[in-house]
Image: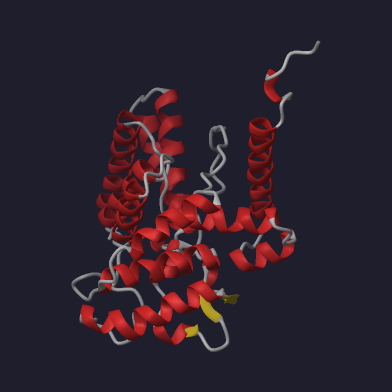
Length: 304
């Protein structure tokens, strides 16, 4: 399990973070060394068993090897980023690296799509109406229409859907349940998938909502590949991932008048400061629109 999640994380760095190959190789080298220490000394197979003390012991072992301080700082950053990913994806109960002293990193705003780009991607699922097309349509309509985390989407069961009421029940971080409303597009796409397509994929579980072409639960990497393929077909130039749909949902809600507290509840954020990050995205988006549209923006027209 440790190695499987590391593989998914490296794929996330490549697709979502759009990091350079050399940077990803550095992350991989750091984390393989860290996990090798964990496996050798504690024989853990479950990330939930790792504590901050285990991480501190690993860092002490590095100090005894006379490794340069800059290298240790980089390793701390790699470990923190990895555990934060595991926590955000609901793969562990808590982020045990959170209290570690970590180097400051430059914050970057998440990629957000505009409505034309979202529509262009989803429209790719209408070209043909094969079972996988209907599944992809339901998956993307639900992702954009609800703002669920990737792990929440992929862990949904059919019983979690209440389509007649326009609601979906979600088990989020910390095993907390929340109810999220669904729009008409998502409801219709889900109905079409469940009635017309899911049975043709020969699902191995009667409960799992989203399955792959083999009838097994759709994986994170499978979801990434679906998004990448459809975005390429739609000729989207931005580097996007399944997480982009959650970012876009939150930003579009705020741009269209939703209050911060409501968006916080819909996203399942414990801290409203996390939700506030999307106000910065929204402001950046509006500034771009202004710069593109106003004659005197960015020195388009010199003062006379």
